[in-house]
Length: 463
Picture 1 (cartoon, rainbow, N blue to C red):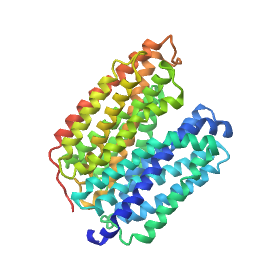
Picture 2 (cartoon, rainbow, N blue to C red):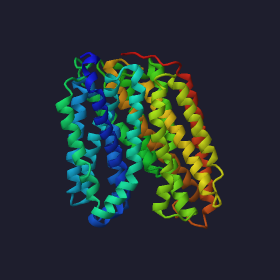
Picture 3 (cartoon, rainbow, N blue to C red):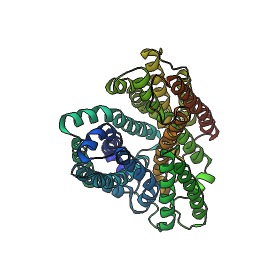
Picture 4 (cartoon, one colour):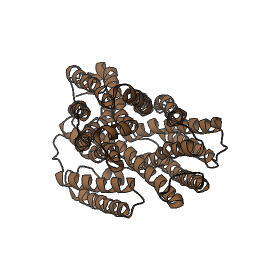
């Protein structure tokens, strides 16, 4: 279909996508605050609790690329609608779970539905909005993602304390069903430019297994087994790349990385950006509670400064990327992130709250300035038949970067204090590990700035 046929519904469609973009990260992050209640009700130990959180993230990440390709073949709106239905159904099943095994299985299903939503949302926006409006639309949608992340600890805590942990799942069901029904009734067109291609089952299976091993291994560092799993994952991904080069209809066309400099370096910049920023909240949460003596609630309210700034700036920067080169905006954003990280290097038990908030505000501004323009650059660098793949790839970079970030932070802290609890006795060692972690993130940011600048001027390959 021509783009003009879908124009009357584009803003309504953006609103539907924003709702789903809020729900998915909310379901991913709000569960963390409800884990103690879940543990008490379902008799879970620490390992099982971690799987409740991890199963959603893992299944979301590993299914993104195959489902993004499937959306290019059978229709992105169809996959988007189905994803919302699966998330709503899985939410109902999670709320009704009577043991930890059921809950984890349904969280995996929820993650697959989330992958269907995130593997199509940016592709649909790119197909519907013309180039001069695309950055603004992407920025608004990115804002919805950050609002979901920001609201998760606050709303999740209120819901869990007032109505029980099941309410986190129940409250999202009407929204998912509404989005699915409204999209089905109102959207009369779809996009499936790769419908003549065959689905690459072999490549998909190898990719899912390799990504699962890599991401789970990295999340469990520094356990010896984790290094082995991460290594197996890397080897599997290299095998996947080799096979895809020889496949007539690959699940992921490697020419996007090896023949499209703009696409490759934009995704590399995204991976590095998430690897340098995601674990900041984790590290500062430990610092605020163990070193500064704040309660979990007070620490949470302080840390919310960063995602709030992300949400505010992301919409504005997306609009800017319609007028100015995304590589310049993204590079400035990553430079601001590096400055914010540098401000956190001298953290100690005398650091003031106002200084910390200023650092978090800078990080939020930098991330918001980077993310929307960079996403616009990725989505504008590919042909229409690869939009689902591109949407899935940028989401995969986000989740992989998050896992890498947590792996780096966990490994560094383990090197300095081992498995001991953080206390006054090892406070100097912990603070030193915090500085080393942020120093590593700064160095990665510099590489990210290079990748962002080196991609060159944006080239829009489709209307």
